[in-house]
Length: 105
Length: 170
Image (cartoon, rainbow over all chains, first blue to last red):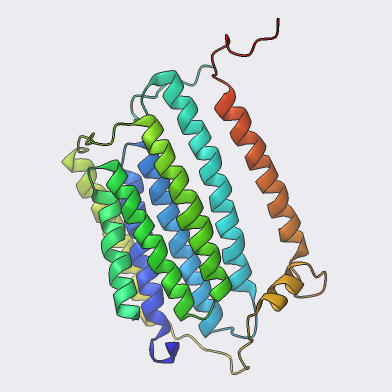
């Protein structure tokens, strides 16, 4: 089924998704939406890994395991980031990155 | 099918980063992740598509929505960031995307002629725990330690600012 779709289409799709995430990362000011942009970026990298694995090296499994570990890293990153965000909200009553400007403990 | 999934991914990812309401942005992110798992099904990686659905769509998005509900009002709109910042970010993203697309279209990929491997659960489990040449036991152990560390860190960070009056031993 996927033989008629060129590999380049997957790569272009992942590129568009990656740079959408970069745009969101640069323009957003809310910490949670920044976290969502990072999830978009990680997800586009996963698509790249899987497309390369399926099209160029179908006899190996490196890309698949890389994506698996990226998903695990993304999950732990989201957990820690949300813990930090909740702590920041408790301390400053806002999660806007421009209002949170002191690191004193 | 590919066109449907990729159109959904592109449209909803753009909506995710431009939507003014934060809860809507989270729901658009959910749509992006679900259509990505559809792409994985198209590439014949069923296990990874299932992992994507359960972990990303089921876990991370629910976590994000919980934290949104804890930290902000649903109906609250953000003020738009300055147009200067928007325009320069868009230019940077566009230039990066165009450069990458040109490079991708220029490059000649050469596929191997070896037969494709059937990816089933037995193979995945065996290579995750094998110490041979194509085994992945070391990253498996490292990722388990990372998950443990993340769990402990999340608990420690989130409970640090708790009010001191609750649960103090006499």
